[in-house]
Length: 409
Image (cartoon, rainbow, N blue to C red; front, side, top):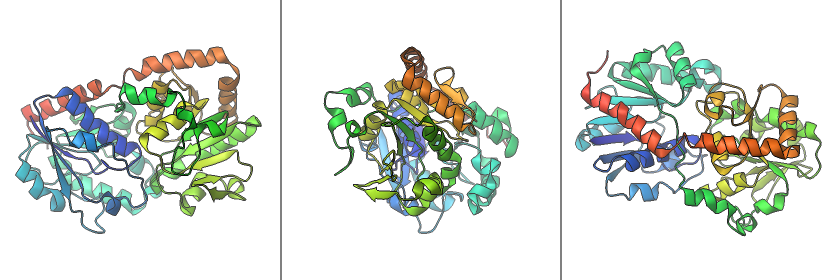
């Protein structure tokens, strides 16, 4: 099969970047005879000026089954528009059997059956957070709706919300869970002797510097996400612990700047804080916000934590939860949107408004080794459901149905 893939986040950090790279890896893992044409911005900085970059896509693009088509993205053209002006010509030249756009947008006149990925219903549930982008996305989707054969959602929770709020026919949707693209070698690397003693970024900290710490990956490169990541509740719960020597280490996926800090932390925490050696540190040193980390150092920082604290109010999936489970780190997360679907019984789930509940769950992880052992065991078992093979086969089932069916109205 000839498959066309629009992967705008292929070279950037964060959940959307992981999705693009995981999808490409999954299709390569499960389709020996396929030809994949990947369309991605030639200069990702033009589209994502405040995001970090990630080069782990390069070995995937070097596979002989992959043809990479760099797109000269027009200045000031947002992704929340139909893709025809940028993509129609290159896609027609590639002549794929099916086409998938991985980020909410699509073509009004695709040359083949088309699937569009909706990662969550955030811009439908809370349009005020997304501002004009919410309106643009709605208008764009109405323009491309007749040409969307399958709407791909990353969780069943996301599908239910999207179908209700767009609205959209559930019969023309599919759920394809995320996968962990990291191989077992990379997942074992954080535990290699001396790994915790290596600087995580140039001139920066080592995981060993932090002693006992909690790790909160908020993936807040874009302003849409920061408030709903609900970090102030996790910080309030952490402060209620009143546990000297324990730190809360926060990993973002973008460049540290004043707007990001103001949306992640309450003003009381920002007072007296400073940027030092590349990281933001609270006045008492108990809170750290890290600069963007490469994939290996990110996994190392997560792997040596006592728990991953994930207080998000709203997720289409919640990638850090499966990363933590695969690394054998207990998960303390919000009981909200897709997170219970993904975590199952392998984590401690708390109401997203309950700071005291987060404090109690963290305290249990710090003080109850039997509970930790049970969470680690369940987490490793649960992580086994999120394989590249499963993701690849699920997407191939979508593609086979598209290639063999008729376009819906």
